[in-house]
Picture 1 (tube, rainbow, N blue to C red):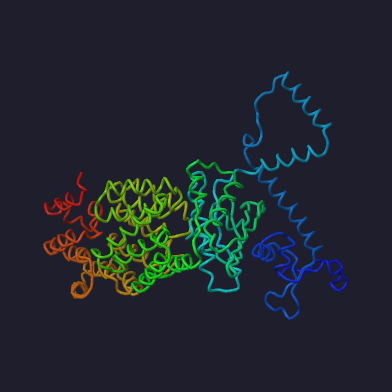
Picture 2: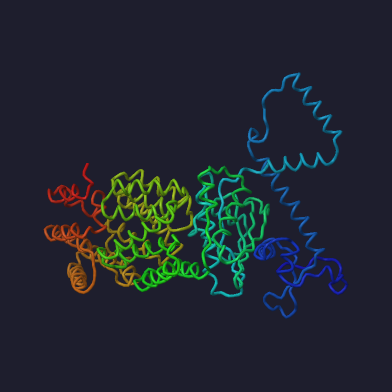
Length: 592
């Protein structure tokens, strides 16, 4: 809490000087509640609390706030001067020589301007100050604060945050940090400069959402990351059915204010929005923000998305959500039957594109589905189209990096993974980098990368699973077993997690435990779907190569996703020259 500012005792202050709540303080300062609370916490803005110190029971005096604002302005101006003083002279001053005649012209212009008056001087000075700010080329949209008074509406404010990020991500000339990184600053008390420094961005967008009845109100503001200067603020009040248009409008306003160059096509995509009924959007958002990747979680998502498309069969994002959920259901970790769920995912993705051909995420998902079926050229074309439509989409960068990896183009894959990291500096993109490094046999780097991710998210299952893979490659089998035993527990004994644990047991010489897990997978295949490729790695680790080829052939017949890594997977190194393996690589379309 800030210390009271010396001056007139509270009892003698005029009533109009008294501000009785965070809301009144924010309104007086023309800022969001989140901002003024941060100013009090981080910068000592003079806010008082009543003696009973009830949470939120605060007051302030406008005279004190005015004095504090003035001192803050002077401090920020000094910091800006120091920053500009540290810049190379060439960045500030034009050193081109001025000829004699030109010098007289300049002096004449100065003389004329001196006679024009204060108004022109102020205008020129204002423009000069404006131009002194560096160009904004990167920003992050911080999680919009839910001020609806109902914690159950959190998914709505998170959905709006994601949508605004999505709109801005269409702009090639602006680097926009992904949702996974910015969500780590939800309800943070860190200052804007601290957040900007961690995310490595020039500016931040922050604000709030209030949903009441059939209306939604969004307050948004832009902040310079280096100086905490608030240089734009706007409030939008719309019908709930116009939420998509509102999200687009906020993104357009931000783009205009940061003066980023937008192409004609980007502008068309940015302004495109349609009316959607509140009931449809509600079901869609609930599907989008249902957490977890267990089978029951994924099936719950599917139910919400199906509810949305049943209410509105023309709402493309709901079909995209449905396609993603079916893709998750058919993954190694969830274990839905590929021959059943993959066609459903493909049909839903194609329906989304039929309704909205510009939906970048649907193109990226279709690329992934083509890749799963070894349709390499089709996958590449869809990835490139998705990247053209949304250059800042992290998932597409990761997907394309994976496609390059499967082709054996490891260095290029790492380049694209690094680009994903730049868009998602604090998120999960580091897992993909670690994954690729393992395939490059750079195990020490892979382990370091994955441990870095786990330092932030200790129970992130995919990072643990990938770390187990890297540790096996490194030959640290007992450490791999410890990591993978935890992974099996977190993943509810998914087939993919058991596969790697059985492989680690086999390499560690714990044959009996490896065979026990192999038998578990075989028994589960009798009653539920387990991909055939889950049995390949354990048999390779046991050096039972003939049995491994039996399961490789079954995996080929099933079009198992794991075969896309045949060309680069280090676990296949012992059989890489076997004629049966060479033929298999040819059949999946990966032969040179």
